Amino acid sequence: MSTNRYRSAASGLPKPDTKPESPPPPPEDDRDEVRQTLYMPRGVYDQLRALAYTERTKMQKLVREGLNMLFADRALPSWDEAKREGELEAKRRGEQS
Figure 1 (cartoon, rainbow, N blue to C red):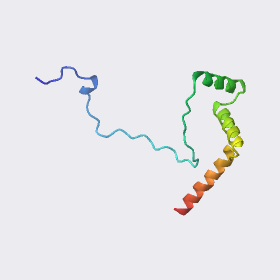
Figure 2: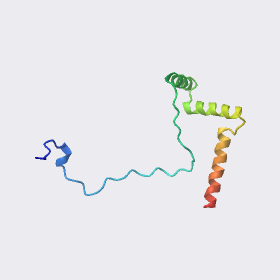
Figure 3: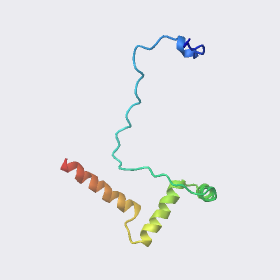
């Protein structure tokens, strides 16, 4: 005997006639950004969070400030300069299509 005695509560409900809607596509955005996960020890996170709270700013802004200091130390373009260069490159790629 292969009948299943345990049925879910939803098994007695009628099946829907249509497929569920797929999620809407992400909004079109002219920004060319990527997401990067940064892993750090809990103590570093807590320190950064406390600093952001004390300075009434966001942790992202403090990380960006640190990256700008690293870029300056390595004689590289700043965050804003690199962003502009990336936007110009994206426009050039779009015009070539």
